[in-house]
Amino acid sequence: MAKKRPEDERSDEDGLVIGPTTGGPDVDAVPRGWVAHGTLRDDGEIAADVRRRLGEHGTLDASAVHVSVQNGRVTLEGTVSDAPARRVAELIADAVPGVRQVANHLGTSA
Image (cartoon, rainbow, N blue to C red; front, side):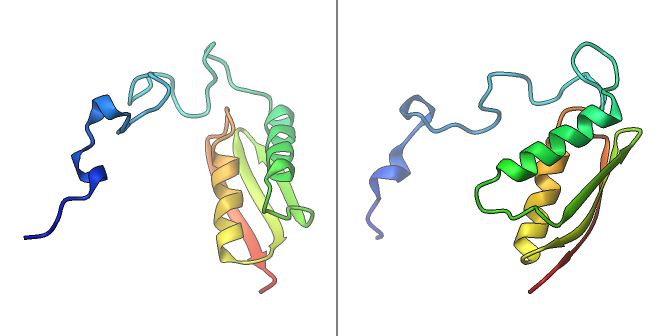
């Protein structure tokens, strides 16, 4: 019989969190692309936010990434170092409030 590890006996009371960590609901009634007050964000605001977040990421070199936004749809073009960086850039863009869709046309230099 296999010996139990201490982490096998943890419960929710011990701090294991499954699901959202913000205390909010799993499903949001606000449609994708809309901000909480019920209006679409300006494309310029979204583009600036995506660029800022890409630039702030610790391991992603986004200096060769071009961001364009039309009606909440973000297009990423240019190059990043490798396939994982390409995916990270897409995830960052998708997490920006107001983004409705991300078209990832990034190439890799590796």
